[in-house]
Length: 112
Image (tube, rainbow, N blue to C red; front, side, top):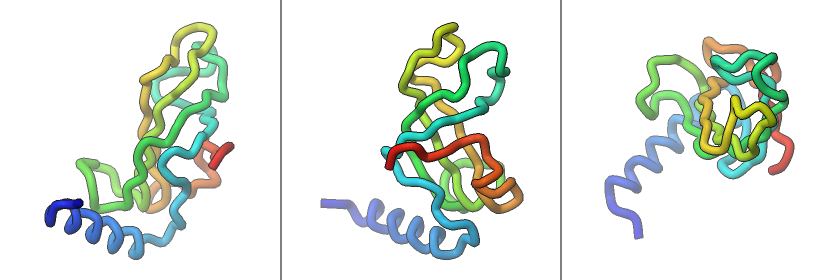
């Protein structure tokens, strides 16, 4: 059973999701392929990297200083040959809003 605070947070999240222009790009537990990770250039790892979506939040929630319609957090689940990306590495992707649309992002859902 949820607490009143948890229920309030769910309601806020639902309202925020209804007020964004960009459709929700993915769901928690989706598997995605990523062709870019901040701070890890192409010569340092074998792209694409496969990861799992661990959080999807609409704008206005969380502690982000970036305006976007969606914040998608990905945890990478496979070790890369050179070790630049390893299990437990996470990356935050911003979708919509002042950022490029999802189609222009270096991430693709491969298993829903």
